[in-house]
Length: 320
Image (tube, rainbow, N blue to C red):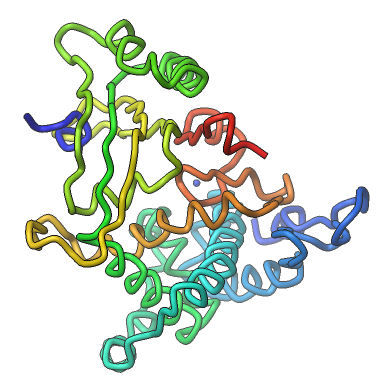
């Protein structure tokens, strides 16, 4: 039976207010001029501001300023810089290398050299990452993008996850269910049955198989994910509560992997999901000026969105 998950399958003058210096307090790295602190490493406000300054010089950024959406640029810049820091550590641990042939092909395609419309016709969710990529430059963009692809390909076909999943329409209900399950993992199935409707029962003891779904669920055993599924033409939307029962990584890729399951354009995102466990081992603090770091979605979100976005709850033994 197809699982529930498979069926479902954010004025220029205002910029400076986004990067105000934090007040120093506490121990460890100084929070003064810190946009992000990852253990002892600091991503400075100046570094983020430099990227914003480059973005606002782009004609395509003018509609964002007019619509008071430059905060999206700041959050995207912070998100990309966090991803870069985590990725560099994982790449070293996994001995990942940029594929030079892919790099040459990407350079020839020149994806950052294409002119971006300045008439507001490109949706912000597509325009903002493109603008930040251009601000960071081709080398930074290509290095991170190709390493994320390498990371995804390293685990694709090898990872396999067993899970329970239930679909709910209301976020608060989904969050409550997730909290109950993470507190009582053994009761996960019965809690899901009680919370689900008769026409959409939970899928229990499901197996991702060797496909890309496994990469999305690579979190500690007994963790619970709340995944936001926006409404579209095929789905009414809602939230999925996923209890990860166990995961394993084989020594080689399964012959059962179906290449048609894999959208190559999604490989960088799958790579980001695989950075979750690296992030879990870190003390990662983001200035509230930018928003909140969301482990489920692996990006910085505004406080208003963070309250109804994806959620990752860890079992008590994995909480620091």
